[in-house]
Length: 422
Ligand code: AMP
Image (cartoon, rainbow, N blue to C red; front, side, top):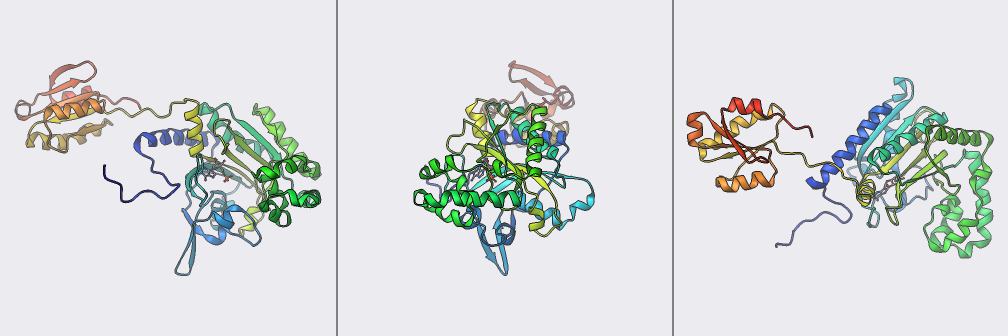
């Protein structure tokens, strides 16, 4: 076989029809869930201004420091969006969505890009679905967002997940907590990994995110943020848990689940699956009451989640959950001769108008070859047409499963075959 001259970039994959069917199925479950929760879809561009993603200085995130696909063209700095929340926040501010009144409830599905080292469950172009609720500080909003995410997994039959939750408090709680962490880690600096050493001065909360083996013993003994929450944040956290209890959504309180960035506030959560291996997060999210202001809007409380589509597919595969049956071909038009081929081309639209799927031969192959293809495509019916059929106006309708044949006019065929529901 010839070696392909061009291939996809490392960490970027083609989604071929057999696979795409599964995606369509998952997407329809997400869209249906969005409808039930009454969230509207938002589609933002894949390219954003780099400044939106790399906001401010001193943000020591992996995304900003090394994971962006960014380029310059003319005077403009472009970045392939690494996530969906900042673009949604940008769009909210740009279009003054708050003027539409009430709480804005938006969901999205689309590709994201991060120049990470690819491995199972981690790609450079991957896909997320997510939802954001902008304009509510109420703990019920947090519970609804979590319920939205949980519902998608439940509907698909992924039930062996763990929902981890925590509160990262407000800026005052976090200031006190950061100091506590600094005081705790500083005397043990020499035992920390190099990455964590840098984080110690820049953002000690991110040490808790560290995957480095050597950091783990210290992380286990580190102070927890829940001991540093302000009264309001504690009340908010308690209410979120109460709402989750009322919704029957199980959770595991995980005091070391933190988000390092300053615009995150209060609720943080993550949904993990034992079926994913090292990259075990299906999705995550939380409250980001300070983000809208950070991207130039009026202070607006907000909460959201983002989930990985590829990891959702891996989990379905591991659990043997079937996704998306192949759509059945209704009719294969088998033809002999040029005239019959023209007839098929012109009559296929009349069948398609009825919602039937119709395929035909494009290569002038023998009837035998065409029948073989009709079989391979699992066509329900073959309509066989040659010179004599055109002359008589009666065509052979073959029921492929029953192996029976009837001679019928085209109108009779058109009336007889009704689309299958798939
Ligand atoms: P994050 O925006 O980092 O909180 O990621 C949210 C979810 O997106 C994760 O829980 C994963 O399911 C998924 N995800 C993040 N990065 C990748 C990646 N590089 N490849 C595949 N999925 C990813």
